[in-house]
Image (tube, rainbow, N blue to C red; front, side):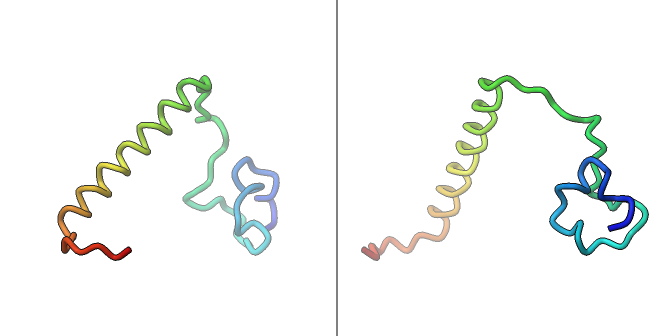
Length: 71
């Protein structure tokens, strides 16, 4: 937990209290790549993610559905 606690992503890392590395790990983010999105853009990205998940879910269900109702 040495010097990493003052780094951007290290402060919020779930392992920061157990970290003993002096070099940042592969997940380190210095905050310079932050994307500034409007609320509408965030909502659109969330909705796109939901739509993609639903499509993948239904594709999976159609492939493995045995036609029985389990209610």
